[in-house]
Every structure is written in structure tokens, then in C-alpha cells.
Amino acid sequence: MTQVHTAANDAAEDTVTLIDNRTGKTFTYPVLNGTVGPSVIDIRNLYRDTGMFTYDPGYTSTGSCDSRITYIDGDQGILLHRGYTITDLAEKSDFMEVCYLLLHGELPNVAEKNKFVRTISRHTMVHEKLRGFYDGFRNDAHPMAILCGVTGALAAFYHDSTDIRDPQQRLIASHRLIAKMPTISAMAYKFSKGEPFVYPRNDLSYAENFLHMLFAVPAEPYHVNPAMAKAMDRLFILHADHEQNASTSTVRIAGSSHANPFACIAAGIASLWGPAHGGANEAVLKMLEQIGSPDRIPEFIARAKDPADPFRLMGFGHRVYKNYDPRAAVMSKSCHEVLDIVGVTNEPLLKIAQELERIALEDEYFVDRKLFPNVDFYSGITLRAMGFPTSMFTVLFALARTVGWIAQWKEMIEDPVQKIGRPRQLYSGATQRVYVPLDER
Image (tube, rainbow, N blue to C red; front, top):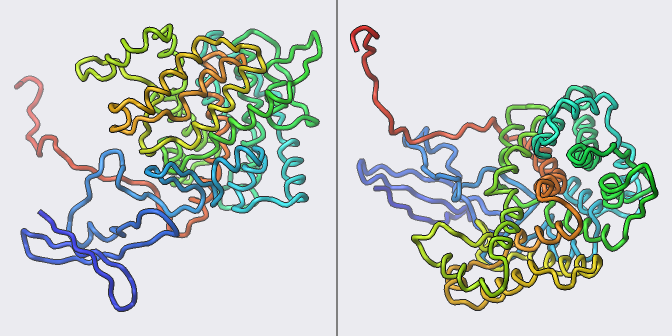
């Protein structure tokens, strides 16, 4: 057993002292304090001093980096990007402004924002030969498979922005990924529909351009509904970054090997594809369809409470948030706005969702376990009302999260203490054995 004691010395530096009960030896480590949130014990010398590793499956108690981008207080339901609340950004800002904030640390002034928007607009087109990649996929290929493959292939087309040691190349790669992700995503959608690709338009906003590339056809003009574009922009903001989640950590660990930025983002897309991460909103929609009608909710609530029943209510609770997900309130508002726009005032799935939310906020079982609705709870039904098939839900998540991945990757590359990611393990396999020749076994 090892005991832990904390203390502060005369130099006002917090420390933690470990006492090894087996040997009586003591080891002292500094405590690093951030501007807000939990402090961390600096154990970089732990193995050198003690010959032991820490054991933390899922890294739930491990700080993997020093970051200034996003802060989450799960107990209080707080999400900040560079110090700004997600509610303020979603209601008062737009996605391009949030992208600039995440990348550069400050909100832009008018001139800075205009320049940034122009830069992103000029990078929205993709190399014409990239179109041929889509023909290599099966017609029923999942859009996430296409997105992952095409994003990784960008490194083969843009050699002038793969030198991660060059700050200018890092910036160009960042702009290219933010700009081209809507184009690549829209092309994946069009491919799945058997429709011709639609080129980007620089006279439209980021969200307007994306919706135009998705739903326009050459045979007739298509006018983007401003309210729908606003809802799309808000959804992008809500998913822009979320601290050191699975996909972001994947991007960082891939980047720690000095892989090119396109490969790193492709790795993040692959991680996001998992149903426990980016596929949660699709799972919520399937669950609502399974329930079918509000009068069947008690049946499924009972099943969710039964530990012997494998059924689980999707979209409730969160790995980090132990309170109401601050993004869920904004997403709920957007959901109602979108349904009003498309005229689906009696959407049955929304009625089921509303009743489930009411129960989750009042039922002792959910309250005690802090199983509050999260952002995925309403995003699925919102996207369906906007005309997206479920196969595109995670693609939209990846599109929005790209800027967060890039900001985290850029911060990691520019961190002077960053090292290649190399977790260790608790080995529980066989000890060294004698090899027996095949004819003697």
C-alpha cells in the first residue's frame, strides 16, 4: 500500500508525498495548479524514483497535457472555450468566429474576422483528382468510411502544408482542413445519393455553403433557408471542441509522432466513428423509434432500471458531465426551431423525447444517478428534421469537431514539453517460457 500526504512548503509550492509502506521510503512530487479546475500531481519522475507506473484504465484520473483551449466542470455543467461559455458563443457568435477563437485564443475584431472568412472561403475547393477517390468506393459505402479515407488522402495532394515544423505550413493546413471538410462531407453525401457533386460557393457563409453543396442540384436553383443555416451554424458551435475526449486524444497521440496534420485528423475521424463516441446521436434516434409512442415510455423506463435487462436509454448521462449538459439546453431550443421551420409540429419522436426528458429531470432513479439529457439527445431528431439520413450524423459531428482537433493538435505541436505518446501497462500475461518444438508438443 502507498499513502499520500499533501503539503505546501515555504515557497508556496504544493507537493504530494508518497510513502511506500513496503520499504518506508518517501517520494515527494509537485502539485501543478491550473487557472481553474482540479490540480494535478506531476508524476513524470514516478517510474524513475519508484520503479512503478500508475494504473488508470481509460485515463479518467490522468491529465495528459497542459491546455488553454477548453474547460469543462462536469459537476456544475460548465463548458468554456478560451474562457467564453458555450451558451454565449452559441447564442451570440457564429462558427467562423468560434473557429478563430479556438485557433488563436482571442475573439477576432472585424478586420481579423473578415480576413479569416476570406481565407477559409478560398480553400473550400478540393483538388479535382480527389473526385476520383469517390468512384473507388462501393455505392453503399458508409459516409464516415469515405470521410476517413479522403481526409487522410489530402496529404497526397497538399505537400506544401505537411511540414509540421513550419508555423506557416501548420496554419495553412489548419485553414485547408476547416475549409475542405464541408466539401468532402457534402461529396460523401452526394455520392451515397447518386447525385452530381456541387461545387462550393464563396459568396455564401460557412453553414450556407455546406447546405447548398448538400441539397442543391444542377437542374434548378436552390435557396438556403437562413433559419436552417443558423441552426446548422449553431450545431457546429456546440460540437466544435470538448476537451480531451477519445477522438481529440487520438489526434494528439497521432500528432505526437509528428505525423502530418491530415493523417492526424483522419485518425480523429476514425475514433469518432465509434458508437460510444460520435455515434451516440444516431443511437438516440434508433432508441426513440424503438419506443414508438409516448404511452410505451413506462415500459422502457422499467427496462432501463432493470439491471438484468441489456436495454439502456441513450442520450442520458455523460462521461464528464454529472449535471445538465450545457449544450443540451441550446440543442433543445434549436430542435424546436427547426421543427417549426419544416412544419413538423407533431413530430412523434419529439413528443417521446420531451416526455423522456421530463422523467429524467424528475424521476428519483435518474436524478440520484445524475442521468440528465446530453447534447446527443436532441441533435439526432434535429438533424433528421433538417433532412439528413442517420448515416450522415457522425459526419456532421466530424465536420464541426475538425477545428477543435486542429486547435488541440496545433497546441500540442507548439508545446515545448510534448513527447511522443507512450502509455505503459500492468502486465498480467505469462512469464518467460521455454519454447517447445512443434513435433514435441
